[in-house]
Length: 447
Image (cartoon, rainbow, N blue to C red):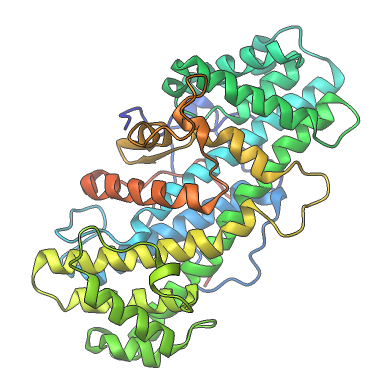
C-alpha cells in the first residue's frame, strides 16, 4: 500500500478529441483548479438511466468525467440511506457502500485514458519529425512529475527491444500511471516491457508508429468500454432503485418489498429472494462466502443487484453495528461480483475481436503488474497484493505480479476483494472523493 499522492497524473497538453478549443486541458500551473460538486443539484452528473451513453473514444475523457461525478452522487445518496447522520464531506459510522469505491476506480480508468491521449500526441508529432531521444519525445507529450519518471524508466527499457524513441516514449506514457516502486524489481520491469514489445510487434499497422497507435487505442477503448458498461448496468440500476424507493414510501420500504416490488430488467424475484436468504444465513460467516457462481448456481448477476438493494434495507433497519456492517459488506460483494463477472468482463475479452486492435487479454497481461487504485490518501497496489500470495510458478526468474492477468476473472476477483478490505480499513480517506482530471466546460446537464 502506498501513500504516494494519488493525483500525480496531472492533466496536460492540448484539448483531447471531443473537447472543443474553448475547454482545453488545464496546464500544470492551473491543475489546482477543479470543478466543485454541489450536493443539492450537481451539474454534469448522470442522474437517470442513459441509453444514449456509448463508448465513443472521441469523447473518452468527457464521458469518464461525467461517469465519475455520477458515481460520487450515488455514493453520497446511498450512504445517506444507510446512515441518516451522514453528510457529504463528513464522516460516517457505517461501513461504506460499493459506490464509495466506484469514483476512485473510474478516475483511475480516466488516468489511463489521459495517458492514451498523451501517447497519441507523441505518435502524432513523430509522424512529421521523429525524436532524436526518448527525453525529447516525452517533452513533446508534456509528461511531468512522477508519471514522467515511470515513463522514462519504461521507455528506456523498451529501447532494448528495438523500439524507436517515439514508440518507446508513447508506450512508456501509456504505463505512466503505474507506481514507480513496482519496477524496483528488475524482473517486473523486464517482463512487463518484453510483453509490451511483443504486443507491439504483433499489432496491426504498416509502420512502427501505426502499431504503437493500435496498442494505445486498444487500451483507451478497453477502459472506456468497461467504464460505460459498469455505469450503464449498476449505476443506472441504483438510481432507478432510489427513485422507486422514494415513490414507494422511502424509509417505510421493507427488504422483501424491494425483492418483490422493484422491477429490474434481467432480475427475477425468485432468484433475488434466494440470494437475500443466502446472505442472511451466512452474513456472520468469517470470511463471508464470495464464490457466488458455486454457492448460488442459477442466480443471475442482475438478481444479485436486486438482492443487494434489499440487503441495504436490511442493514438500514439493523441496530447492531457489526451485523449492519456485515450486511453492507455482503451487499457490496454481490454488486462487485456482478460488476466483475458480468458487466466488465466483455471489455477485457470481447467475443469478437475489434478490427484494428491488439488482443486485449495480451495487453492486460502485460500491464497487470502496474495496476493500482488510489483510495484517497492511500493506494491499493496489485504488487502489494501479490506479495502476500503463494508463488504460482516457483520460478526465480519471474516476479509474483507478472504471474497474473487482470483480464481473467479468476485472477481479478480475489484482488478486488483485497482492495475492498484496504478501503474498509481506511474509510475516512475513502470518502475523500477524487477531483476531476479535466475542467470540462462543454458538458450538458442531464435530468
